[in-house]
Length: 232
Image (tube, rainbow, N blue to C red; front, side, top):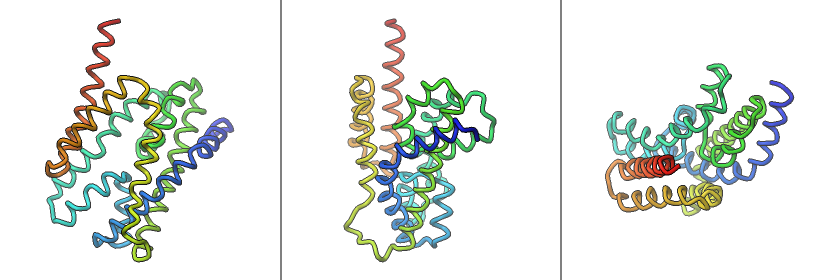
């Protein structure tokens, strides 16, 4: 861990701290939801460590509680976490020259917030140690914040009133990060198509509407990119 790596990591963590605080309520809500579903504290910690995705954790709990098959639960988890496959493809160039262990850890700690906040800055940074320090430092700090919030939520479930609806705080924080990207017409079109698709198909079972909305957004983005390349 070089000086450049440490400085970049510390700088990223300081700048990312407000968003981490914004995701704490969502982490608390995840812990409360898992504990309310009948999970033990260690099961809550285990699910958080293995899945590490608020949407996948909260999205699969109703299926687990209702006794759905492992196949259905697994398929739903994949659908809800499919966006990370796109994020991985986006960030892959930033880790050229890194060993496999670093790449595996980078994939595990990946999160929506860090990608939204720093992806452009990381990909534009020509120095490997600087960009990996920014990504890995901030993402690792994000993991610790999420784990802490989940454990606190699971431990103090009985003391947190249900009517507080903490889970919406993280959505609001991510929406704020998304707003600047909407200045680009292609990004706005992708958001519009995927958002409308999710709303129209919200009644589909097993959250299939969410999965189809992801594919619709990806297809829209790919279409615009293809048309732009042909025009050029």
